[in-house]
Length: 330
Image (cartoon, rainbow, N blue to C red; front, side, top):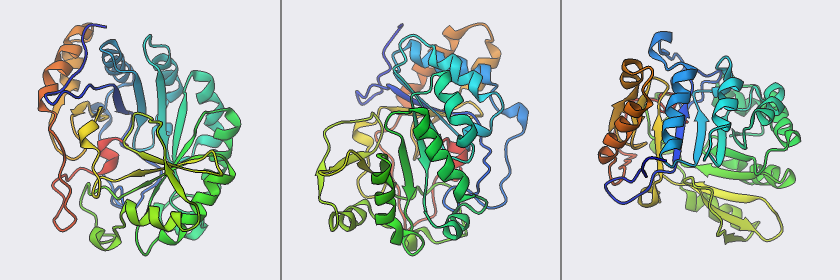
């Protein structure tokens, strides 16, 4: 390890989210527009370039990598990338976030390749509502993928649910029950105000983590959990279940003070903050220095002073961040 990655506010970067594609087989209403324009192939990082970025971070003390998208499992040869990253000395955890559509066939190969954990998006247990939120998704395929992930032996598989008032907030408790039945963790996520959307008004569909937690507590008393995953979820546990409930609250309770994360988009932008545009072009460095990973590490270190103290999300204004979540990377 050549150096520790510490930003200007004393926060050590130990967790990096690597996007492997901006493409997705779903069109979730909170993530992207229905008619998306995706990046031309020459503008996206090759799998070898993504590996070089991951290796550079791990060489400097990063212990957790998460593969994101878009939908990472539609990227050709994704298993080869998983296998190479999983073999990096010093990497403690390699995880992946997916919509679950490809997991029925890929869960076991991913586990065999060295993937440690999976997060799976699941916003509804009703087929028609699931289709409406995802625009193109098939609920049965995703549920089969969740079962395949469990059968493959992944530890602490987690579901992610974005709750929209008036759309799926009536499914908060059914989603909790589903997770409990399968001994899965479940995180509820306040909608991220990234990209301009017209499908719904975010201010009207917003529901806070606190309200969701209060609804759950009416059935299942919640106790604060002391364990941490290194991510932004604040976890609670139920006395009669091994499942944990997490809450990701970019609006009501931001997680900036302890932020240990940066993101790399599939076009090679090193994003220092989810809610700001502070970034550095690693693609240019990678392609100008095809055999020199020192240059990549130097560019990462030089970028850290750009990491801001926090983000500012405002439901009453148009989003300052015009890139969609699929462009941001999970």
